Image 1 (spheres, rainbow, N blue to C red):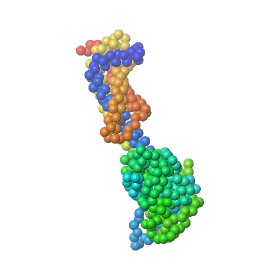
Image 2: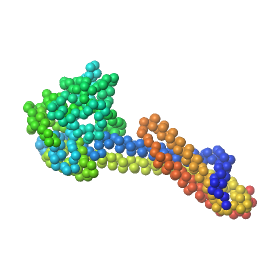
Image 3: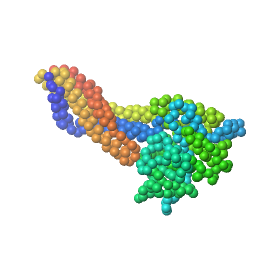
Image 4: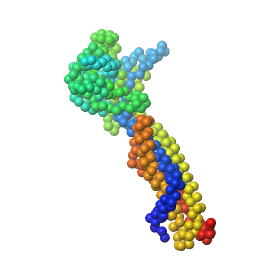
Amino acid sequence: MLKLSECFKIGLSELENNKIRSFLTTLGIVFGVGSVIAMLSIGEGARRETIEQIELMGTHNIIVNQKARAVSDEDTRTSFSHKLSMEDGESIQAINPYIEYVSPQKEDLYTIIYKSKVVETKVIGTTPSYPATYNSEVQTGRFFGPHHIEGFSNVCVLGAEIKDNLFIYENPLNKEIKIGDQWFRVIGVLASKKITPSGASKLGLRNFNMDIYLPLTTMVYKLEAPIRRGSGFYISRFRGRSYFMSGDESDPFSLNSLTIKIKKDAPMMEAAKLSSAILSRKHHGSEDFEVIIPEELLRQKQKTQRIFNIVMGAIAGISLLVGGIGIMNIMLADVLERTKEIGIRRAVGATKRDILYQFLSEAVLISMIGGVLGIVTGFLLTSIITGYAAWRMVITPFSVVIAFVVSVCVGISFGIFPAKKAAAKDPAETIRYE
């Protein structure tokens, strides 16, 4: 009985004797494996990009955005709503037991001036909880604290990109920039965040790196006070602190958004429903806000991505199927050509199992060689697609192993029938075959 190593050695010599035919047979497996690796790498790249982009919003956050709502004569509920306000955040903080803290944001476009540089960018008025809410790291300096909020301090923190635009070769700390008609001292710079075009378009992410952050009280009291309606000021409480705000109590300033940080292991959907119910009651049922749950967005994106991966995997699998059919076709022709050889081997003592293993080893060798070349092709395809389509593609060890294993399984599956056919031939008839 032939050893398995001997079967592979004989199979390898047969492939060498028919190099061109063996190469053409291998191509089907090569492109099939390459396609599987490329498709899996596209899926993995998209998955990681989605996770990273949604993490910028905070997977443990609930984002409440102000939403414009038309007022009709029949529905006057909007007139009782002040839109999003500091009081909304205070109510959510006080009533919802799942909340760790709430970070309010008010934003607007302003002209920024530093020496001869003039840039128009978004200015965000917020509170000291902002970095923890959005997992933002302070690269240089510090973020403003509660004393800056209470003192209406003219301090600001820059995003990484706006810092590079204004201070190319300078250290921005303690430098003063002009925002609107006010001068602000730079006390910190946030670390850069990678915002992809898909994150901006599909998830509605803004470019955080171009933002400038101010104490919320400073933005409302100093930047916006001259253009606000009403006169005088009113006291607003938030997180146990009192803030002296412009306007009057019947027309408080509105926020653009509230970011609600959920406690660890707290039920996200329950926290979101309770927060939405609190806001709906305070706004008298007016639908002037929308609730976004990044974690839910992530689930939806991953579900869509799984469907995409299945479809792309099926397309790549068809290539392997075609390659397997090619192996079967060539092996059947090989069995016919080597009928007399089979008879001679049987005559000198080879068993049916020996013949089966011999032809099956050739099919497996074709698929293994095709698998190795296919892995190389997959890396090349990934590099080409990444370079020309600018897609993020990630090749994982899993994708390489699974593609190679599938190629070997294809060789075994499509090689077993020709091998069995060769082993089943009658020795007496095969030795007389011309």
